[in-house]
Image (cartoon, rainbow, N blue to C red; front, side, top):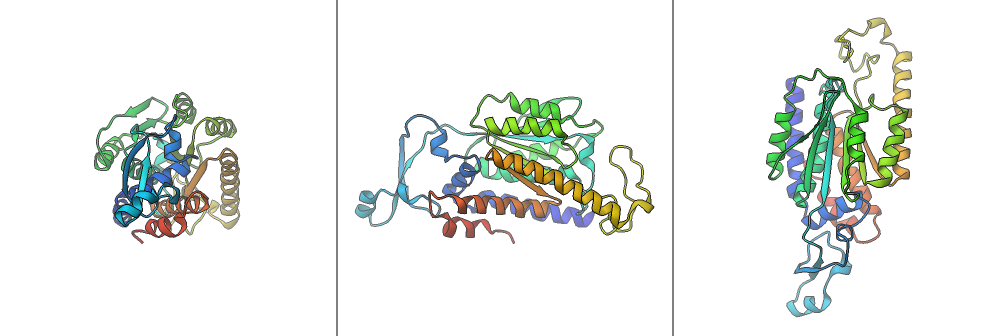
Length: 319
């Protein structure tokens, strides 16, 4: 557990650096592409001339004001963006099932929470309006907070200090997300790989068709894999009973791994069809790398600017 805590501290530091190391234009572009549109286009209406400033790595070449650039002797960018903020909704499953362990030794809820911290770090850098929502069988709670990323972290840490005695309710979380009226708002839903049933896939498909969405899928310990159990008993997260040792064999392990991979691939296909994304990982460190990879690849595939050489090196931080 001490090793897991040290690893988590390291990841938290890298997440904090994520929001401060990237240039603001790169952050805007990264989130804009994940949402399916550039930030200035999502504001609605005719773009307004907000400012003329010095070019920064990550700015689109088409925004360079060549006349002003020639006059001052360096590249200048016309910033056309409305002053209103975007909205980002971070939804976290806090059912007791999320106390299950990952191969890294972390509880699933901590890996999921770190994924939400990554989105918060970028969103708050862009001055977005960020909302944090917890859901279990007892209630769906919007956790209020005001301020920057440090305040977000404190609020999330405090909210995670809970009894974890209620089962999950993914139906209620999805219904809450469906009722978010702002169709431009980015919705990030975090849970583990055991949460979804077939009816949830249909609900997520409908949600992804109306909102930009990212699904966080936390992969937990395979209970039949003796290699990840570290020779310690593995307990069922709901019944608290130990998994019989004789079940820890290659056949059971492979059957579980194949089934989980099949479900993850099916969900990923559904989200991809709707232009949304899924990040699946079994540790905070792997989640961070997957998040950076998703942003980097998505930026590189965008044909509207030259971020392949400017933004991607910036994203390789804290290695």
